[in-house]
Every structure is written in structure tokens, then in C-alpha cells.
Image 1 (cartoon, one colour):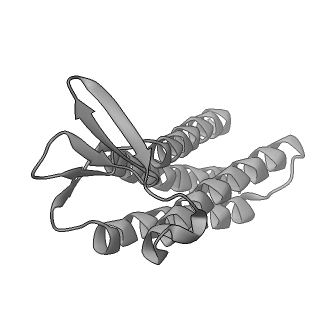
Image 2 (tube, one colour):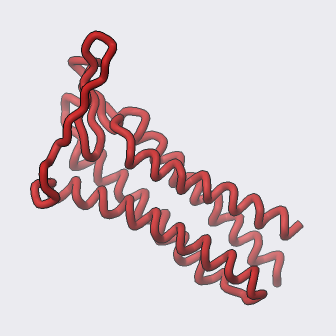
Length: 162
């Protein structure tokens, strides 16, 4: 049973990380409400003209990124890093037959807090009145939820080992 929980944990958290990476990398965080053909990601703004999508960078230099958006990007990247470290710690603990569940759970909790904070900051500080959230933002929340499910699985693994 513990092996099945471990495999499920790895699959769920890997999917969560993949969704967070996809969320950051895609250009559909916000859609302009007045024109359906315009959408914006964390790094680019795109528009569709005659069926072809054209994208351009929002900022030429990192120093040009507004503080709240830079915070969102940093929090999302920290979530990915903490979750990756959590998985490495958990798998290393299994391979070395050591109990590293508490460290992995702490890193995973940090990942969830960072990911959720980044999404909340984006919605409250970066989203403008004339924009609606789009699917990239939503899959970011799905990724954070999967990390939460992974944390529950990690606690179940911890309980089973005792």
C-alpha cells in the first residue's frame, strides 16, 4: 500500500509542477474584455488577426517589470523550486531508507503557499478592470490544488510508515 501511495504522490505532484510551469509559460493569464482577440501572459501580450496570433514582449528588460508582477513571477518560480526540492527529498529518503517526510512536507507546504500567494497577488494587484482571467491563470490554481493533494498523500505516507 505504501508503494502505491508513493507512486500516486509522485504522479500527482509531477502533474502539479507541470501545470505550474505551463501556467507561467503560456500567454493566457488575462483576456481583454472589450476585444476577445487580445490576451496577456506574464511576459507577453498577444493578439489574433485573421487567424494568426502575433505576440510581443511586454518588457524589454527585467528592471522594467512592475513590482507586483515581478513578485508574482518570483512566487510562482519559488513554488516550482520548492516542490521540486520536496520531491527530491522524498525520493532520496525512500532510496536511502531514511525518514525525510517532515522535510519534504515542509518544502511542499512552502510550495503551496508561494504558488497560491502568487496567484492571489496577480488577481488582486495585476489584473486590470478591463481584463478577465483566462485559462493559464486557472491551470495555475489546478497545479496548486494538486500540490495540496500531494501534501495530503505525503502525510498519509508518513502515517503509514509509523
